[in-house]
Image 1 (cartoon, helix red, strand yellow):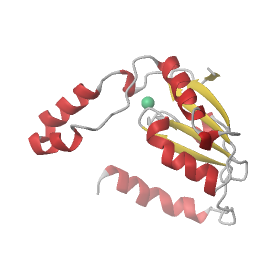
Image 2 (cartoon, protein in one colour):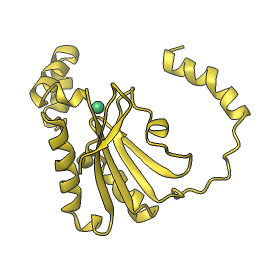
Image 3 (spheres, helix red, strand yellow):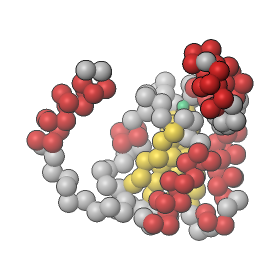
Image 4 (cartoon, protein in one colour):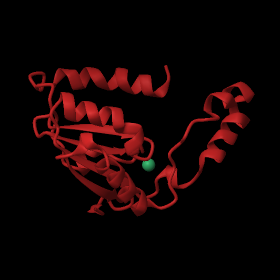
Length: 167
Ligand SMILES: [Zn+2]
């Protein structure tokens, strides 16, 4: 069994045996959403103090607002969230490459046919962390659909566990 599957199989039985939260409602009870990176070092529940059932946690590479827009609109329009925290982080992989590098690596690893599949893909990388937080918050606020939503931007430090507000 692969590692991820093995972890699930071995851990889920014990988790389900002590699980008592099956009564929770579908809409987040505290009416907010957190957009953060998929980075394996981030524990949103612990680091951002999110009780189960309280908030949506939307994750992707780099905590990209553009990439997450579909989920953000669903969170707000269908499930009633009115606050959004955009949390990028120090040491993010998205600071370390660009579109050309990702495309070239795909070509090297998987060949020409695979390369064609990502040739037009925007990997939404960024060279400056704090600026990227500001840009994503501004990009979100430029949309009519975000009017009335309280949007803040943050940096989480994977080295210290601390989160600080940027905008
Ligand atoms: Zn990241």
